[in-house]
Amino acid sequence: IDPPPRPPTPSVITNPQWLERPNARDFERYYPPRALERGQEGRVNLACIVAADGRIACTVTSEDPAGWGFGEAALRISRSFRMAPAARDGVPTSGGRVNVPIRFNLAG
Image (tube, rainbow, N blue to C red):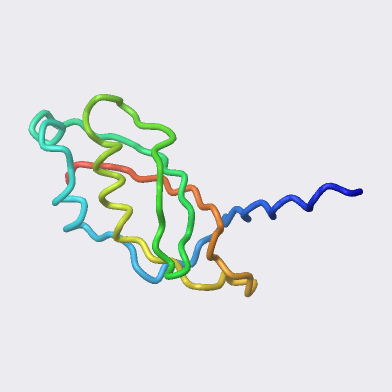
């Protein structure tokens, strides 16, 4: 008897088509206060899964520098993303995985 088939591995979306993205106001709202006061910039990488409605659910995979609150801020900002229901090649995006880099930069 053959074992049951393994569930399909979610596809990795490398060139996402965003219907909604965070704007400058979102970054201002969620920029970590202590980092803002001290002039600290940061980078976060998120690993996300796309829901049926195009929203993404994410976890922080890296945060630099750590301890300044950029990871939590990036998770809040990630709520502003919404992906198209199908990729450019027509494949549904629901259940797919996408890596989202977030940069926190202070305006010049």
